[in-house]
Length: 475
Image 1 (cartoon, rainbow, N blue to C red):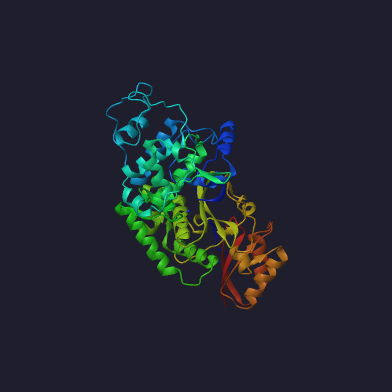
Image 2: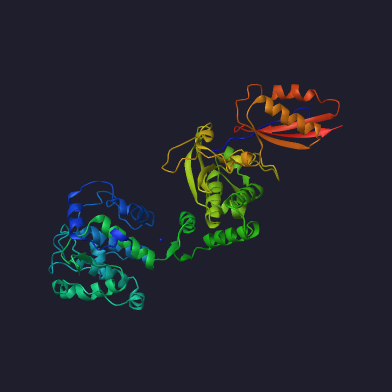
């Protein structure tokens, strides 16, 4: 959704406490803590794991519960999918009498897991650390990372409880500890692996995410993936031709408009201006409810030059992220209709950026507007509505009109600024009113009549944000 300008012509990626050692005191406490939220040490990595598509449905809650064999089997198959960008084949056989779980069947076909006996899997039993090590090692080898594991292997840790390790788990534990993936826990003066200690959901999720961060590749399969790719550091693989075209075009645009030494504000401004100058709002299709899929996409902006709000916001998000600026897409409503825009972080503070509403409709070649460039939440709520968990935007420092000294706080300041522009014979002036203008155009007409001796005509545009632009012609 977008609003249309009212135009009037007048006259004319292992950290301390969470090194995946999983000491027994923590595991026991975690087992007893049946809470929905994760521990503080795990929160960010769990969120990153969810964003990366690593967590199966149903495991994004009760994070401190002990993990079952079935649950980790589901995680292992999903990790395999994300690491390889492939879907395992449907299971052909089920040797287990105690489960018909589809993911367990896939894991068995892949060779990731075996049963606790020839015909039982014990899906509800808790996962021990040595079981976890074996399933992770099998997952990585089946995903094709055997060579990387061998290359990255250092000297395996020596554990005081080495004799407690089962023979079937020794190679996996040696390989994972040698790669620094699983570590022991210090008990007194001794380092122990604690093979029989159980694992919690959050511990397993964090471990899986760290494996992904180390070995993973970011596969771009759709435009949403492409937007996320700019926000992470993994190697990126794009196989789809249209997505490759978008990525290539985005990089070419940034090479054209971004210069070394630009501040975050300057980079944001250059991206904003590029989108406005090279995109027309898909007005006719919007009116006729015939908007094509391309107009909702980044492709619509960067390749076709035609889009609606989703395309504008997605393009801004992609270019800003590629340019090193934190950006988020916000979904809400504007003037009662669905709408999308961005929230950006400039010099440590958050601002709202609505590129769509800065682009005149119908399109006016070369016109640049900044009414929605870095505005506060309070200002945006005049005509936008939304709910999200993003930080509050309360700063005005890098609002376009504030930083350029183009704001007026009352009617007297407004009239003085307009009068000075006319007296100086300026051809145009743009001002943002930070107050409620009760008079509006009728008051401007009365003011400008005072300059009739040398002012031949004028025109103006204004928008909902309080911005007015004048153009003057003199005798």
